[in-house]
Image (cartoon, rainbow, N blue to C red; front, side):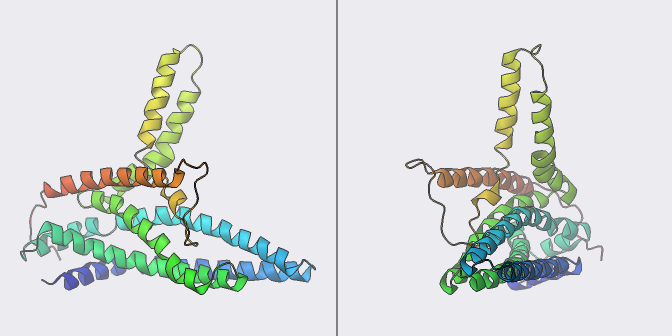
Length: 279
């Protein structure tokens, strides 16, 4: 079975689960942002505000919207990345493909290829909307707009490997519990609980518990802060010669590699059971 056919097979499965509505929703969001920025500019000019001042305020508002998009895109990618492999195992597609002398590695690459196509489509939709708004405000030239979408796509693809690799052998809900429930719910609750301890608890115990939670959180990097989109320029160091962004990027890659290795290790040893398709 050709690799392109495998990718197309899993792409169709992803679309049949109505995931394409996510791309449509993204298009609606960027259209709404363009409308709000245009209305804000029009309102400020009607109030007699100088054009350059109004433009700076509109650019600041657009940057704020871009920051929210970066935050939510990281979460959305984790959710979508876990929707490829588990349903294929459930309906027997994975088992059936393995009967066609397709290796597990080739199967996983095909599934990730379908996921990558979906992420590329969503990234282009979001970037096109922001590029149009930024170009109208003079905050982004055509040359920068033609390459800056890669600064959103590449981090999202790398980040998607965490959720995807774990979902190769585990249900989507378990993946969400690990990658979303722990950093956004469990760790904040533990931090608040440890902070509520009074002085009756030995200082060494409080310090040890705090350090354990802090080190645990290192497994869940804040990838959104490392995405520089919609610009195509890496941030400068805050305190030269301390390169903050490169070290944080290296930490994020190490944490992502940790989850990917766990996912692929269990994938190599996973028993898919019967290879007879159920549908």
